[in-house]
Image 1 (cartoon, one colour):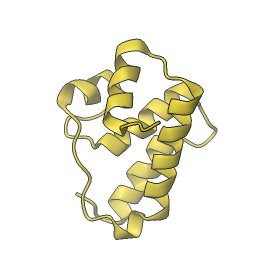
Image 2 (cartoon, rainbow, N blue to C red; image 1 turned 180 degrees about the vertical axis):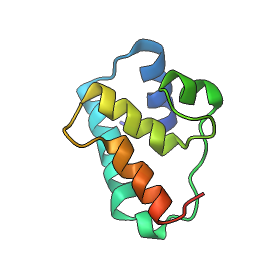
Image 3 (cartoon, helix red, strand yellow; image 1 turned 180 degrees about the horizontal axis):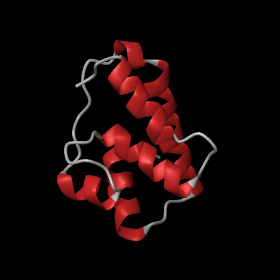
Length: 94
C-alpha cells in the first residue's frame, strides 16, 4: 500500500481522521526529514487553504503541514511542528 503525504494531509483536513497506518506513514516521512534535514535545500509549499486549516502561515511547506497533523492526531510533549520549524530556520531551508 502506497500513500502520498499531500493526499493524507488533505484527507485529514477534510475529515479530521486518518487510520493508524496512515498516521504511521506520516510519522515515518517526518522522521526521514528530521534524519536528513542537513541534506534538504528546499521544501515544497502547501496551498494556502491547507496551511490556513492547520493554523499555519501561508507558504508553509507540506512537511510543516504533516507535523501539524501529527501534533493534532498524536500529541506529544514536544511539538513536532516546533521542532521542524526550528530546524528549517537553523538550516536556512527555503
